[in-house]
Length: 258
Image (cartoon, rainbow, N blue to C red):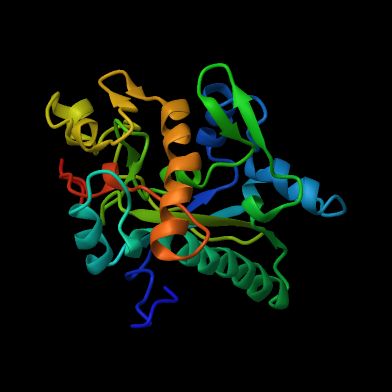
């Protein structure tokens, strides 16, 4: 965390796998946008000389849960992130970037071509008529396909260890059995969608960006930049940002509440 106590950024991870030819990846092109890569598309863009098929590819996905200390600190906040949360968002994600690179290097040293889509020079953000902000690869969607969780009212991914987390993925030409998904609906773990109850994330959002209609990404972004940036710089002394209110102090913070 780069703090005086040298605290760890993350608790023990979760790992899941999905096949490159999983129909969900084609579904994402319908739901997110035609620009969203399938595993085969980003693999072929990265390795144009590899005659791979979608069936030969595996998406390796992981969840890095927030520590109990970080969640407890952020649970007490109502307007801006705790310092622990901001540190995990910035320095913890720096580790996540290195983890992606490490896994790609490890696989390639073993003779397995691999790519971390989010680190590709070809990855880019896109504007979406339906979702406002989108991109050519979504770590949360890869985690959903890899049996690691479903989406909540605030758009966060609710995993078996809860919604307070970061995630990452790598696409590799390797045969690994896919993790069986224990859910049918993409919103199965959210109390609001499953039972019509809860809505704790609505009350927790300092930007008023969450309602029963879902997550207003524009309001969320405008709160984060520049408000959260300026707060982190002036109060914590480093360049960064964060929020996490909808991920802490809610029933899905550390578990699947359904």
